[in-house]
Length: 182
Image (tube, rainbow, N blue to C red; front, side, top):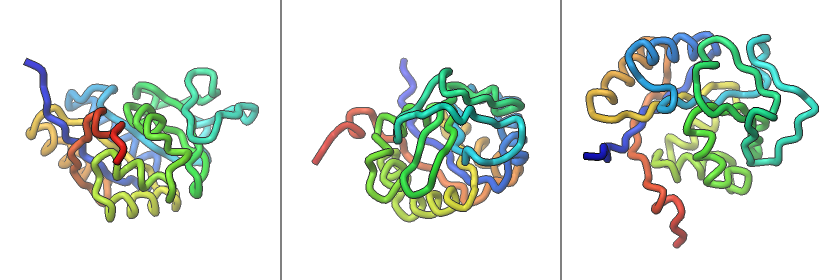
């Protein structure tokens, strides 16, 4: 029987070190790399996170292995790393299912930056705006897809213990709902 549980836990981290600790704890707890997403500013600074300046990824589009994105440490465990530009905020690196979600929602054309994409992903508008504001100030967004209510509780607890802030739970939209236009 397929698992139709569609919840994600979201939070903001103030530093790369805190995010790496969180990712390590999530991995140790049994979460899959394909269930964890990170969205971080491209200009964080440490040598473990670098990009080739010659890359010109189209605005709002993700770039794959040819993007020149190199991520080490715990972030290297994540699946689907790509670079994208978020209007009004700047260049970011995304890893995990969030890469496909942002590209699929056409984040480059979303009025108001990434807020609309987050709302489309099931985050309430006030939280989406708050997350966009924190991203603009250098915060790092982490989301964890959860397969059941126990995983939601576990992810929230791990995020709280590893320095996550403004932690929330959203109901993920189905692909049909995301593609619907009104």
